[in-house]
Image (tube, rainbow, N blue to C red; front, side, top):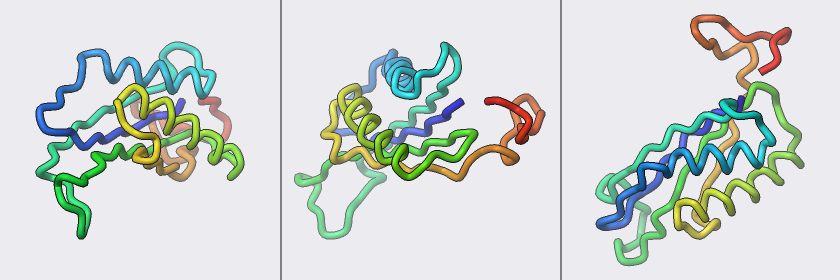
Length: 127
């Protein structure tokens, strides 16, 4: 059930392909070993005019990718570390970014906090 909110800072003239979100979802599904329809991706392009880093000139901008990962169950620190490496490499490849510029945030577990179709998912659910 992982849900990914992915924001990419676009380079000048960069346009995302119509299949980019699908490719990211497939990559995530492979990493998380999920069945079809179990990894959801929301891809949000961000114009470079709406992103800045203090003391960094536009010519030196790394055009990063920010990824929020929401999972139903909490992962161990070791598992998160492994997932972070795999996601950075895979998403960096799909988005033509250096994995060093793919930044990943693991959100608190969604169990007891998320509802699908108005139904709150609890400990007894398997998402």
